[in-house]
Length: 282
Image (cartoon, rainbow, N blue to C red; front, side, top):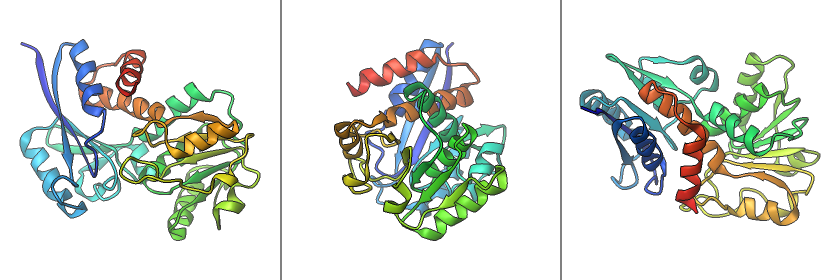
């Protein structure tokens, strides 16, 4: 009999997520029957306050694992029994794995972003990187780009204290005090070699540009984490003026690869998962 496992995704506005298709199809190639359930707070008319009940239900129902997305990546932490080193350093969780009676929080956003970034922009100049967004995904990207060797990282968030807190936390983990909080977007982007966009702006449910188009320069690279739609207004503007770009699909596939490994204990075929993703969004 084929092995069966139950997994899912908790978040808001996730009906267009490709995670079910990616995870279930890769499981099929390994002889596993996986059901991947979308648990959409928006569809239920609920908010983050529903999270404790959902985590309790996941324990009772025998979920093998859960992905966690906006706006729950930080709120879920107090509800778990333990955190991986990466999740603790980043301060956010995007995957919860059931280990016996314990729920352990992991973060595959950082490693997933790195996988996609190296694949799409292998020659990117990391001397002065701007990160827009200091939430859960932004924290993961910040950790990852510093691990890749960014000489300086300037963090901008509409909540200035959150950007300052992230910079301080990163500087405790990395030598050289390479992270700073930017006072405003215009001054932060001036002289930047690259931009990582890690806010929900540009998603199908939150359309728009996260910064004025005139701040972009052809010499910059732009890494987007939004993948629904794959061609965001930011990427469209960046490509029009000649920036090198990485779409949000790269990070999405990278974290899905790591998630599958955590959910099943099996090494996925990264190339096959990436090709499947590209077919789905074509």
